[in-house]
Length: 236
Image 1 (cartoon, rainbow, N blue to C red):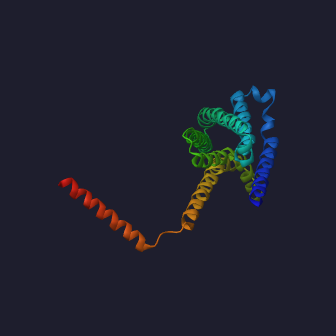
Image 2: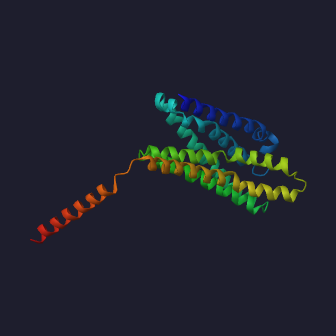
Image 3: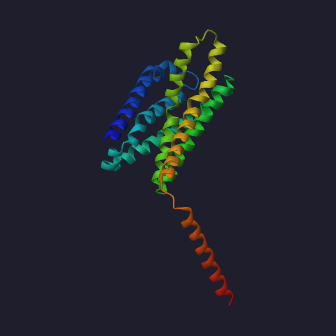
């Protein structure tokens, strides 16, 4: 009961934070002026499907929904993955053609390119795992996929924290910071997530009682004896 309550509280907080940043930042792009800017339609499509993935992602992690409404779970999962596919493809085009080629913002552009690639890879691995009915791997890759999806939110949080400590007086400094954050907003959270997932496995494996050393030696001797007898019989 406590575990379920904690899970609901954490995911509710995630939804609230994501909703706040969605309302505060991307909605300003949904206007006629933004649509007619260079790459405006592509950016709008990227933002729209990225927001959809942000909002649908948490629904994949509620066991109650997964068990009581499996059809809804699968439907929202498909929409989530399709949203990521569209959003990531748009991000790759924007990063290569706009940020890198036109604006010459190499660090920022490659950071977004890395994010889009990680987005596609983690989501693709989650899809591959569930198609092979590997539910454990599916859950792990879905967690990683959503961590990358939250790169949008992590970027804004890190930017606000940095801005509060170091006022961005120069434009060059602001561009330099945005380049660093374009990498750190997804790479660092993804690394921490991987460490947590693997750490849980280490703790779980260490808690399993191991057989005494004498028992293991006896098993090895029996294996050697049986293999020797089999070889002798075949030679005869």
